[in-house]
Image (cartoon, rainbow, N blue to C red; front, side, top):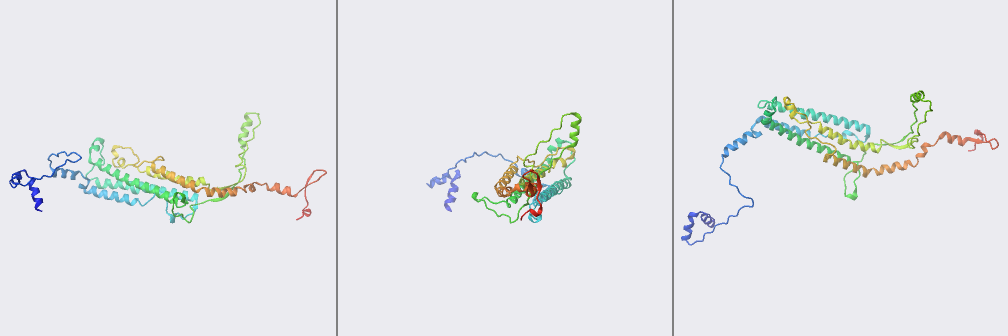
Length: 366
């Protein structure tokens, strides 16, 4: 302790002679300059600056603080919703593809409406109601508005809304991708592992598509005969696939894939429907509406989700394709002419006259 006191006294130049008379060497600590240069700060009125910052900070306005709490709480409450319906108990899977499309479309419409009314419009009404005492929301001069505190306040709420909207969209995309993953098999060779649902997602029927009958356009033929004397050419034969009965999946695998990928279009539509707050908060300035968080198919979150969904489809479509190939091996049975087969079975040919006649039923040996 004494040593510390002596070293402290040695730092004062007025004590140098004292220690010299006592024949005690003066030990001064070497001062090193910091890596980053030090600039001397001129004297300033700390209290004045502190008060100025306090007055300009949003916490100085009790109404603004209360509005900020309401704004953030409303955004947090809305995070519980999702753009796509992934509630297994509500979906009651498996379902027909047409039913799933209706359910997702209805859910998307309801969430989109809630985003516009219960989230955005509610916040606009609350902001105007809480802050109208100290701020003029009916300012007609854009220059005056740009220099006013209200501009900073609205920009602040825009950033808060953008932050929570981003999180809401991100959670909706990730939850939909994880939801679809539960109906796919993991690739163990790539160290993938997750629990697969014990029930399927979509009901797919193995059905027969009957060949389409050609329909002649009589009206078109009459018009052609009236204009030209040339005979009407016959229609070209349809392709082999359309001219015979086929074994198919109903709905097709491609239709199922399209339904899964179209979910990203719903996410884009919901996100782009939420416009910025400024245009509605300042009606007399006639600001243009623009999306608070605008995204498209090229947005990284959307493109990454589409890649994951496509990869899951490609890795799991091999089994269904092999199954339908086995049924297609016997597809020719569907295209056998039954009348011709019966006629060939019961017809008799006279060797002298070469006439074809039916064989009496009594002559047929079983």
